[in-house]
Length: 117
Image (cartoon, rainbow, N blue to C red; front, side):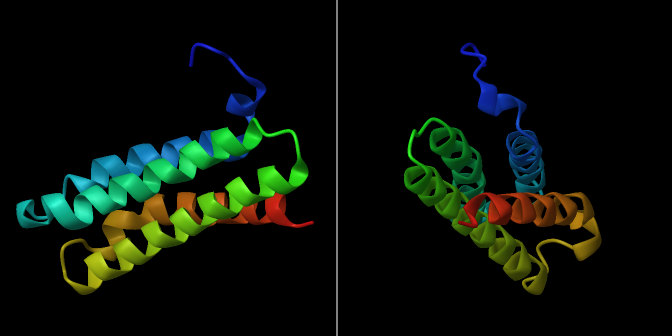
């Protein structure tokens, strides 16, 4: 935000940010009794996607960068799993998650390309 570093212009960073924002918005639809379980875990995992992209981008070695991108992708898979469970538990409907699904797939693809040796 204030530093205006190059990684903030990367497509993966922009898409990841949109994913985080969408996750926060959709998390408001989860039942109140999930506030301290699924809602917080969803938000933590979504935030981890973005934070690890940012931190990985600041690393000088390719090995270090890849490791942070792998962590980010792992968090993305965690978010996908939370949504799968939320649909199965009938907390959310799959059609409410269309935008998030597109962002998940797009971010996953970009991160996977960045991880390839």
